[in-house]
Length: 202
Image 1 (cartoon, rainbow, N blue to C red):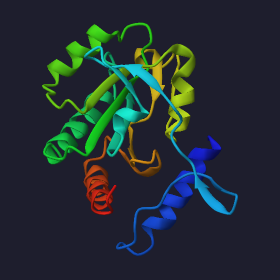
Image 2: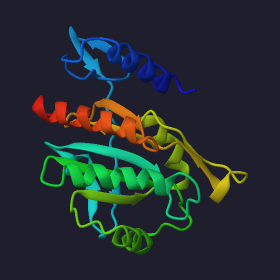
Image 3: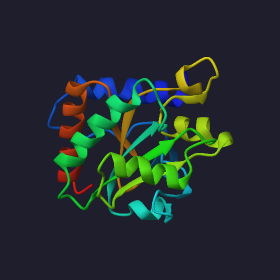
C-alpha cells in the first residue's frame, strides 16, 4: 500500500473517532519549513475536459472538488460510483463553490468526444463537472496523488483495476475527506463532510 494512502487512512480514522464538531483534518504527510507547517497538496495538472476546455489547478480556485477515477467501458463498479456522484451533484447543484473532476484511466479509448458522449448520457449539465483522460504513464501517478488506486491490468475486467474511492479536495489543494463511492451510507457521511468544509469557508 502506498505510504501516502496509508498515512491518510490512519489520520482519517483517528479523526473519525474524535469530536464531530472539529474541522475536517488535512490528510497526508506534513513537514515544517522555515517555522511553518506545510501540508501535502495535490500536484499541478493540466488536462482537456469533455468540452475541449483547458483545465488546471486554477480551474478549481476558490472551490472544493470531488475527484474520482473511472473509465467509460468499466463493467464493474463505475456505474455504481457515478450513481453516487450524481447524488452528490444533485445535493450541491446550487453551490457554485463545488466542482467535480473525473479522471478516465482508459488512455486508449476515452477521447474527448467519448467523454462528452458519456457525460451527456449521464445527463450532466453542471459546468463545474470535468471529465478528463489520463495518459498511460500518469495513471498511477495521479491515483497515488489522490491517495487512490488505479492501474492497468490485463487480467481485470475491462483491462484496468481501480477503487471506487471519492476524494474531497479543498481550495488549497489539500485532501480533506474520502469515501467508498459504492457505499451509499458512506457517501452520505461524505456529503456531511462536504457541507462542513463549505461551512469552514472552504
